[in-house]
Image 1 (cartoon, rainbow over the protein chains, first blue to last red):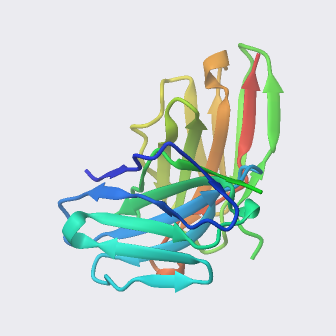
Image 2: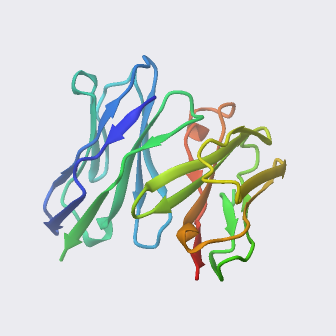
Length: 113
Length: 117
């Protein structure tokens, strides 16, 4: 089985600060996939990114960036110049076959104006 | 595409009553998942279907819970009788392994907020 750990339960920052959300995963599979989802206060779960285990290239999408390091089994998520609209709970997840998805417990991000 | 559609958005019921949650997956998706989210336990997988067949229901809490998928475009999660501890947000999600990488992820519905009094 796989396991995903998000050690940060809650983070508070002031707008325009950079913030990194940590995600550590455990797996014995050589092929696996990692995901980040955002859950804003409205409650829906919004897909942010999918990454496969063979692609360690970091990805940047606007103010969002992801750092995937197999050596440390981490898939961290950084928001640059945070905004109040970034306030949400963020979930990291893993899957090796798209049948079972293993979710972390989530990190609640509070961005204050 | 309309996305995954769940109904109702909110359900308030009294203990002992039957509750039925509904889900319409994205057209063409062959996997359907039911999740429950609570503060204490986070996101829990209850059951998932592949091509309308239940594959793993080990997450279903007890016999009071049942799920069906009579066809590719509809699934239900039923709780009978309901109890206050069933209060949670129930999410339906769908995905596909045959429609390319863009579908190899969970697409979630908006969820049903269930309150059992």
